[in-house]
Image (cartoon, rainbow, N blue to C red; front, side, top):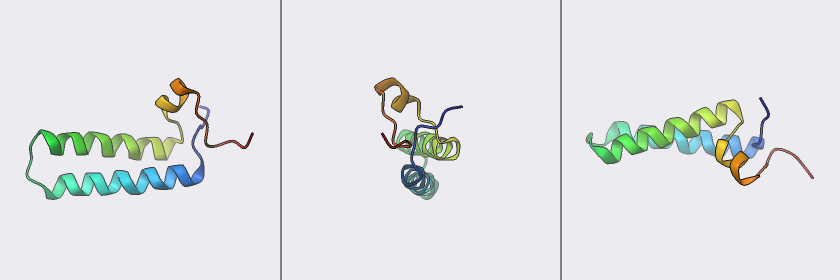
Length: 66
C-alpha cells in the first residue's frame, strides 16, 4: 500500500487519536462519545498504516518531497 502521510503527520494523528479515545472513555456514554471513539480510532489506524483515504481523494501527499 502506498503511504501518503509524513512521519510528523502520523505522530500528530496518533497523539490526537489517543487523546480522543481517552476523552471518550472518561466522559459519560452518549452519541458524542461514540463520535469521539470513531474519529479517534480512524486517526490511530491511519497513523499506523500511513495511508489516509481522504488524502488520496483530494490528491494530498505529505509523505513525499516534490
